[in-house]
Amino acid sequence: MEALFATTTGILAASGLYLALRGRTFPVVVGLTLLSYAVNLFLFSTGGLTTDGAAVISDSAGEYADPLPQALVLTAIVIGFAMTAFSVILAMRVRGDVGSDHVNGNRIDEPREDKS
Image 1 (cartoon, helix red, strand yellow):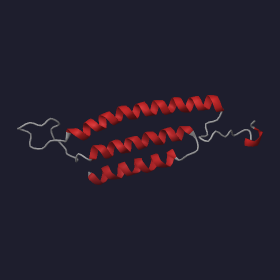
Image 2 (cartoon, rainbow, N blue to C red; image 1 turned 45 degrees about the vertical axis):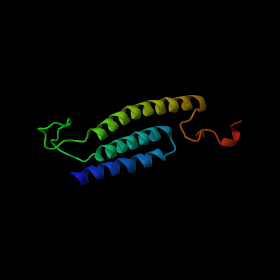
Image 3 (tube, rainbow, N blue to C red; image 1 turned 90 degrees about the horizontal axis):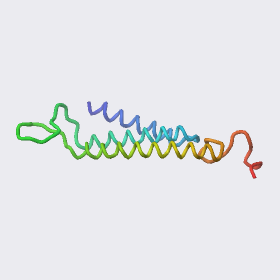
Image 4 (tube, rainbow, N blue to C red; image 1 turned 135 degrees about the horizontal axis):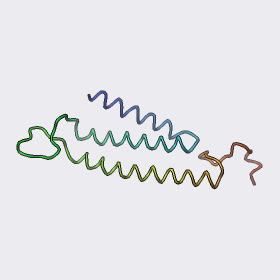
């Protein structure tokens, strides 16, 4: 289970990094979202992977899950949604103002020298 978890986290991080380095805004937004999912999985794995472990510590529970990484992941999910919403709105605003979805602001239909 740990190997599958680590592989999934690595694939999400690699895909997110690849998409974040693209030249258009939509792949950048999707890449940032995938990177945030990879970070959430990494934070979740820091508490140790347990199956059938109790989330709340009690005397009768033999094995329990660490609640601190779960709280961190919950906070990171909320922050990730806010960051994604802000990125989408920023990309839409840039598309409306500049007329292109390139991250450097170049238009496809006209060369940079004619833009004055």
